[in-house]
Image 1 (cartoon, rainbow, N blue to C red):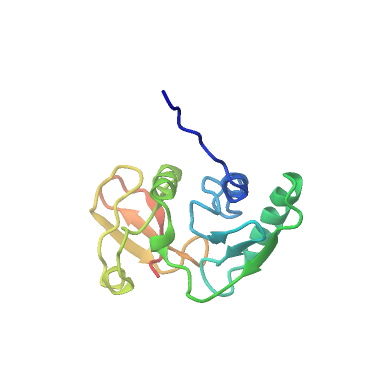
Image 2 (spheres, rainbow, N blue to C red; image 1 turned 90 degrees about the vertical axis):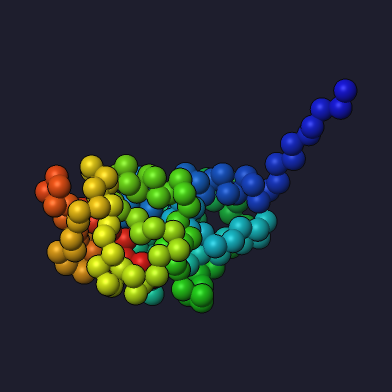
Length: 162
């Protein structure tokens, strides 16, 4: 009987390190969960902030650098690219669930910005109701909007779709 051999690459080990680097504004999700990490190789980590001018970009880079250095990957470069721009479609399924558990409504996968601008209802992360309304395009951070559930009356943030 032949047993399967699992090969763990350097890229896999670096990704495992990054899976424990929290987003500075939403510590319940990692930079991998949010799709901020675009690519991982043996020589570099490519990141894209959630939007151009995101004030957390420097903190994200510093957290990634510290994690890489602490795990023996000081020679791995960190590069930032803005093209193509980050999309909420890059949030992993696990990341979407972590956001919901944290009280933030992620947009549905594949949702277009125009659908959200046309007041497509958000699902309340507290009670699951779709009887919700946007209160303000400006939430706790620039990448989120403030919503309220009409069923349980709780306010919540929703990621802006882009």
